[in-house]
Length: 206
Image (cartoon, rainbow, N blue to C red; front, side, top):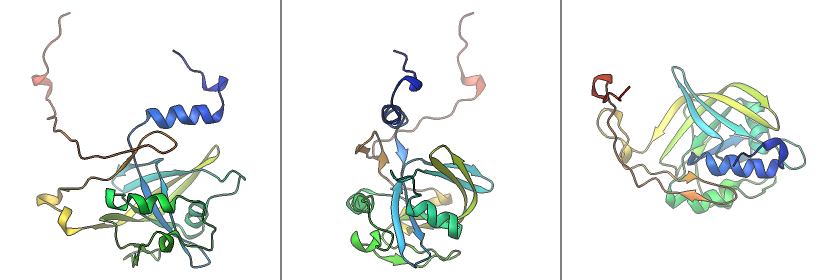
């Protein structure tokens, strides 16, 4: 079946996109408002896009009213934020943080979490998160109703228990985002597939 997005509602096209591009990592972001309130919210239009420099991207939409979400406004105003990864024990707290809190109320407090200072930026991080990135904004790009924030990682925070030899990460199983509105997955079922050289690839008949 061919499905032309121009012939369907935006909601249907969004549903197809987010149910097919799976699993997606979740950026659980703390940002700092000009009122001093720490905002916490999850976003799954997120990934790593560069290693030199270390760049990540996160796409953030708008509220139904058309106003920017608190996270987007805070990032645009301060030029910094912290990305955390959601493990299974933090899933309930993440779900609370996705609710529609007003700008003057912190999701961190409502979720029963605690803040720890960052090293390179003013925005604090979540003490409970086993891994997080301190990020400085490089560029923001409007793309339709979303804004794509491109940011450089300026500090990693990784629980000592996750670090193996030669900086390998071991025992880390963050939750992934599946289809809308509320589907998630675990990342504990894994396998190793060795890369092949060209000489190892069997020849196919002409």
